[in-house]
Each structure stands twice: as structure tokens, then as C-alpha cells.
Image (cartoon, rainbow, N blue to C red; front, side):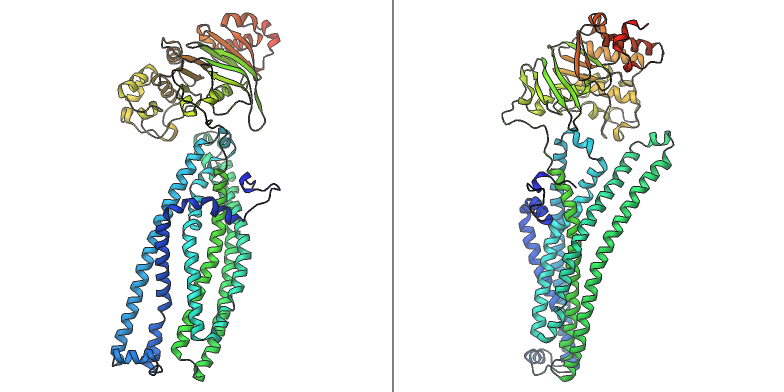
Length: 629
């Protein structure tokens, strides 16, 4: 795992312990809840005191009622004054047991409820912040990080982190306080036996410290394997029709099984280490208990301590094992939570590549003039997409961008929308560098129809009105009619109120594209961006809808990425992109006369229209004039 810069020193080593990194990174989420945590700690103190007091009523039964060995003590005389008979003494003892039980239940209830509330609130706020942060990240993050892995960090890892941020503090305090108070009472009862009881604690502490490091490493591996399982499942389930169409069920099952087996092995490795830690605790506790019983019985036979004292002492030894085991378990849980916390911190430490400048302004009164001024850009992986690209789109001008696949057409749109920032040069809208415009304000100037239509799991009307502050029912229906979508929408079970399935999978590709076109009709912005707007539409509807959207009389700038040459003559200008450069810029007739690359594209399109097989984008432009189109 490569550590974020904030977690590394100049030599690349961790400048803090991993657990300290997580605690410091997320401590601010606990600060607003300090009152609840304080009350929970007070309730924990009450629980500990009740637990320490719980063995004493049984001691009184043995030493006062059954053997009368404490009659000369202060407690014995008090019992004789309160209860003159064994029956009355038992009533008092039973009442004490009930009071202790009530105290335990009340204190533990208050503690558990406050911890649950605080934990859910902390996780809720942290998950909210993480999701907001993820929405601000650049597209390259989601191209390199698998969706299943991100979902696991947002859900499962978050719950594991809660254990350390909230429960671990109170659990740790409860266990330490229990050990301290119990040991103190044991030394008060019999210092000699107490030394045998606590002599095994250092062994347990050392074992926990050593094994918890290995648990933390094993948990990291386990979470990575689990994220692989989630990613494969997400990928396959999201493309099940494709998997079934190509009979890949067995292949995908084998791929899932490989990831699943790796996750199982990692989980077993983690469980084995935890069991090893618990085994050490149990053995050490058993040794301490044997020593206390052996020497305690001799002390009772010698008359130096009562049977009730030994009973209380044994109860404390057994009770002492519980917080020690909890501390050992807490070490393992903290190791897991630390690994999960580091995975969450890794995402939160990624800074958005594109952010508002300190002096950025709102875009107002935009006319729609777009200028690419000597723009150069390379993706984060080093792939150079654009080189010295320069062109101007005047307000209300209709411009088509054409070129081979991978020439850089879609990259132009990504840069214009500021999904990425240019490496050199500048992009201007109305003579204002887009880097000086607030991102949200800039994107409000565009209506975009993407080649791959994305729909959300809410109503049809809400999908069409995406990005609008309010839903105008009449405007939505008008936009749907213009896009040729009104007829099929009315046939849906609830019309425009029909809730779509995830990604709109129950709709055809053409229907999804028509909803995307309806969005563009409804969103009256100064600039319209279309990336293959006719994709998935039938021929008649494609040309009528696309033509209406591109060539209507509404005043706005139109930038269209297009491979369909049927309407090229109606564009004001056409820009030809090749290998990340602008190689030509002019009208359809001008380019047919003077641009070999454009001639090749036009010729290949015409052949496809006639059903002639051709490799449209492998044509040698220098030979294109000799092609018989």
C-alpha cells in the first residue's frame, strides 16, 4: 500500500504509529459528542463498581450465615444488629444482590445506548463527509479505483472504524478500571495471593502487543481480498446480460471463486492469530487460578483467611480474566479498525485535481463564445491526449468536431467542463479563463448529452429535470415530446412518475437516449454539448430529434461530437481532430476539397451507409482521394 503524502516523512517511513494516525485523523468527529462520552464513562464507572461488589453477598452467606466466622468483625456485628436470625440475614443479602443487579442493568443500559447513539452519529457524519469528498474527486480516481473497493470503504470499513473511535475508548477505560479496582481489593484481602493472581498479566500484555501487530497486517490483507470480491461481484452483477449473452457464467464464477478463496484464506489467517492471542490469555489465567486455589485453601485450613474470603478471591481472579480477555480482543479489534481507518484515510487524503481558485467568480451573462488557446493536456497516466489545440467557437455558432476514435474529441469536452485542467494554454468562455470561474457556476452554463446515457433510480420526470431547481411538469412534457419520448413515457405504469430501475436498465438504449435528449431540451443554457446524440435512436427519429436540437432557432452555442455526416452541410463549421491536434477547420464543402483526413472520414461513412465493410479509421488519408466513394 502506498501511503498518502501526509502520512510519510521525507524518507517515506511513517512519522507516527498507524493507530495514532487513525486516531488523530478522525478525533475531530468525536469532539461534538464529548458530553455523551463523559456520561457513558460515568455509567461505566458505576458498572465496574457494581461488578466488584457482586461477589460480596455470597461471602456473607458463607462467613455469617453458614459458619459465623465473621461474628466478631464490624460487618458481622452490623449484620447481627440488622438481622437477628439467619433467615433475616438471608433476606438482607438477597436484597443486596437485587440492588447490585439493578445497578448493573441501569448503568450498562445507559452506557450501551449512549455508545450506540454516538457511534451511529459519528459514522453517519464520517460517511457523509467521505461521500461528499468522493464526489469532488477527479474522474481518474474512479478509473483507477474499483467501485466495489470504494463501496467497501464507505460501508464495511466505516463500521469497523467506529469500534475504535467510539467503543474502544470506553471499553478500554472499563477494562483498565476493572483491573485496577479488582487488583486493589485483592491486595487488601490478601497481598500474598494477589501476587500470584496478577503475576501473569505482564505475559498477557506482551503477547497482545506482539500478536496484535500481526493481526493488523493480516487484516489489511483480508480487507484488500474482500474488496476484490466486492469489485468482481459489482462488475459481474452490473453486466449480467452481457455475461449470459457470451456464456461467461462459468468463467466469471471461477474468477469470483479465486477472489473468494483468497478472502477466505486471509480471514482464516486473521482468526488463527486472534485464537492464538486468546489461547495465551486462557492459559495464563488458568495458571493464576491454580496458584490462588492451591495457596488459598492452605490459608483457609490454617485459619488465616475465611472460606468466604477465598470465595471472593477466586471470583475476583475469574472476573480479572474477563477484562484481560477483553483487552486482548480489543487489541485485535483495534488492529482491524486501524487497517480499515487507514483505507478510509487514504481516500480522504486524495485531493481533487480541479478546485475553485481563491479569486474565482460566478459566471453571469454568458453569451457562449468558447476559445481553446494552444491547449495541451496529458492524462495522469502520462497519455498525451491534446497538443497545441487552438480554435474559436463564436456565440450561437453550430460547430461539429470529427475525427477518428481516440483522436481527443471527448477530451475537449472534459476539459471544457473542467473535469480536468489543461496542462498548458487556456480555455476561455467570453474571454474569461474557465479556471477563474467557480466550477458549479461554469457547469451551469452547459447542457450535455453524453454518448453513454446515465439514469438514476428515481422518477422519469426527475431524470429529465436533472440539474433544475424545480420540476415544471409542463416544461418536462414539452421537452419529452421534442425528444420523441412522450409516447413511450405515457405507456409506463405511472407515466412521468414511474420510478426507473438502476441505470434505467428496463428501458431500451434508444429510450434512455431520448430521455437524455429531453434533458438537453429542458436545460436552456448558453452552451449545448452533444457527444454522439443520435446513438441508439432509430434512423427517422435520430435525424428529426437531433436536427431539431442542433439546428433550432434558440440562440445558444452548439458543440457536437459527431460521426454521422448526414447533416454536416448544416453546421457553420467543422473541426477535424487527429492525434490530439486540430488538422483542419472549415465548412463541409471546404474540407471535402482540401482535407484528406475529412475526405477519408466522409468516404468511410458513405460506405457504411451502403453496407460496405470498411475500416473507417484505418484509411490512409494520403490515398483517400483515390477512394471510390
